Length: 309
Image (tube, rainbow, N blue to C red; front, side):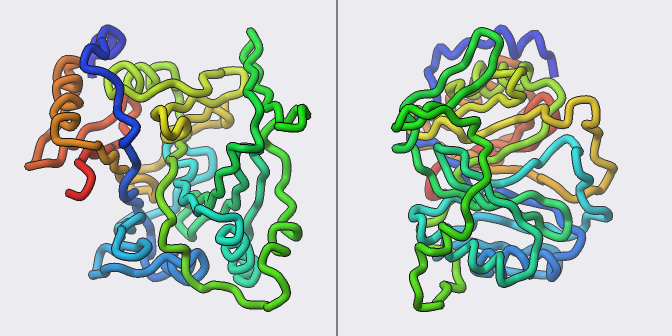
């Protein structure tokens, strides 16, 4: 991929519209039945389709995650590529039901309070990271980034936060009351809110996601170690971190991890505009009907479709 061309591409056809959202995320796993123990039985996604090499999971009739068999080894820790895929729920009670299922499962998980969201983290047996997230933007007054790149989150009460504080899981579980009932299924309005990857050269990736695809920048801080982008409606949709620093390594061949993720656009006209921008930047892309397949500068694969296709 000619990297100079990426930097030279202009957004003369405009930014991605606020209607842009993330669609199904496809993951490679070493063992589909073992992965289903987490994705279906603990997290509560419904099994929407399955064959000998693939399983699709989601809520209602919407596919959120597709598991592909064939990986020969789990994704190692601190490997470039998938950090986590984030499924967002729309109420704190839904997050509490997930916390209760995780607690009962005996799986190792963690929980963080990012101020702008509350999150639970777990991995499937193949090492694919998972975040279940409840957005709480009303708690944020403002975000401050110093000239050195340090990020501080100022809460509505004026207090400063790192965004990495531990989440009070016991307090979260109190949202379920005293009935003891725990919903076994993920809420039907859950959705893929963002995808987060480990990267080697996030600045170059941002030239692609901002300058070619048309996302808006959000946090762009080497000091903080994270670069992300989104739309006017959702600022944090695709993120890259460099937290592994010198310990970052390439995943071995045939490892588990991200196969590809889907970006759903608002119209066929916007799909055509993205295709023109990819072509102008001399970035390989393949069109198959109303699906465009391409990749970013670090080889993460993505597909573009129109809502409803």
